[in-house]
Image (cartoon, rainbow, N blue to C red; front, top):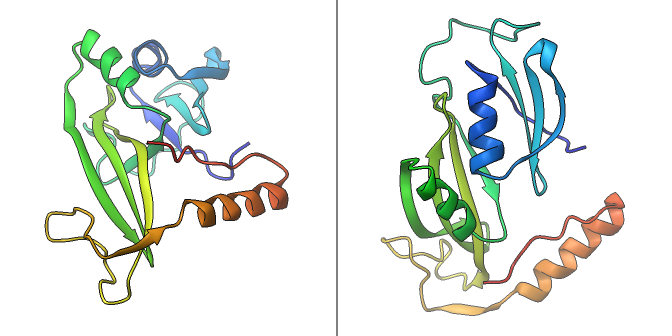
Length: 183
């Protein structure tokens, strides 16, 4: 089980399952229908869905649409294309169309293709596929230009270092934490 699994309060569990399972391809890990609850997973990403008003609720303030204000859930997938095709077939509107962005994470910059979509209750999901990871020269600490694109002063590709780090994590945790780093 993941160390962190967000539990989302939903207004209609059946509608949420249509979105997560039927459109996005999440699997149902287990359900407690009498409580309006389902645990779902897509690859290594896991969520719990809990219908408000059935069973015990974890509501700290009045619920108002959209429920997911102020948070987005970033979910890594091997490829965006299948998700985009299913969303298009279902005529589900994207909140943010597909874009390629580079994010500095210390000396490493990760480039990813991503898009955002809202679930039926307004929770914002940011699906991404990793494009590259690169180490940048110290004279360009951000490693990105004003448009968010990777600059040309990249010292070298550090995929081998990322793989070595993943192997250490795998050994330490006794499970496969490898990330999909292929373009």
